[in-house]
Image 1 (cartoon, rainbow, N blue to C red):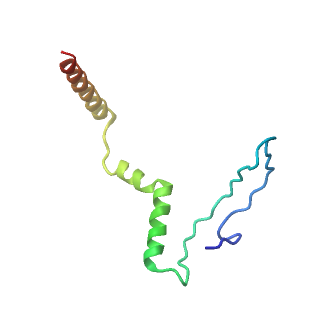
Image 2: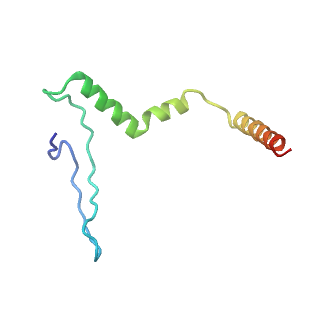
Image 3: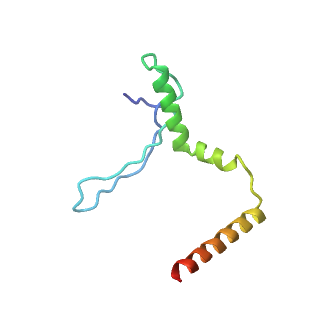
Amino acid sequence: MTATAPGDYGATTGTLVIPLGSTSGTVTVPVVGDTAVEPDESFESALKRFKKQCEKAGLLSEFKKRQHYEKPSVRRKRKALAARKKAKRRERMSD
């Protein structure tokens, strides 16, 4: 696998300072999303790569979170009920 500018990564500027006693440092480089299917890439691997990019971006968790809207008052009542149940369970366990 190879990366070429500017298609695969963005330019970055700055200075890397390696502290005294250290032997390495970290440079952050912005990666540009690879949306093209390479000629030698199978459909399955392209689909797998796309799915990983979606997971990395948090799209799946965001989608699942927004799939069902819960009003704040309903959420508060649900949490209060769960807290009461938990307290009741603790009370029974301590007896």
